[in-house]
Amino acid sequence: MSEEEKLMRAAWQARNSLYQELIGQYSAVTPENYQAPADSTLLRGSGSDTGDPARSERALAILTYAPDPLRHYWTYLTSGLSNPWFQDEPQEVSGFGCEIMIKTPAQDRWPIYVLRSMAYHVFNSVGTLSPGKLVRLNAPISHPEPSELTSFFVWYADEAQDAWYQLPSGGFGIFVAVGITADECDFAASIEDYGTWCIQEVLRQVGVGQVTAPGRQSTMKRDDIESLKWSVKQYAANFRGRI
Image (cartoon, rainbow, N blue to C red; front, top):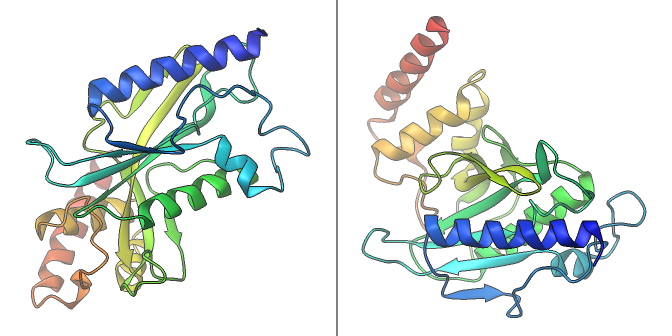
């Protein structure tokens, strides 16, 4: 076994144990043969672009967690973005430095498709997804089913309060992608530096939190939305003035 493969296996095992500690036992996984990658060169080739979505899919698993007494929602979490794909020794950041979560009120297939799409983008752009990122899908998140939610923002997951975790190969963050409408995305984009925090706080105050429900309507249609927007923007402005 090469040094790359040893590091890959150690990182996979450590992340698996961390997930168990933070969230518990998953109820399903895609693909079903969830295990440490046997081939540490899956993402190698011409840059990181495999040119083959199926190849990238073999590098990534989506774990599904059913609701429990502490969580009333379903949780979907990637496992593979933080693999040390291009490393043979520990570094400051492991792999692409992140794993992404989606929470839903009911079990469905669309979170798996969306997470795979987001991961494929990361794999092929040699990028990452970090808190504060706005992602416009330009299509319903539950496609082909209709939904007003056509964008996501990335933020810190409530389940991973430390935000940054260490694997034998380096650090990575566990972040949540929350579905939002086009006008909610516009609101977030209009606020310098703290837009994603502001829309997250609006969602918290109306009881949505970090759960993505494709059938919900935009919070921007609420009768009290102007006062909500003003209060969170004022808080963000005051915070900005203190740093």
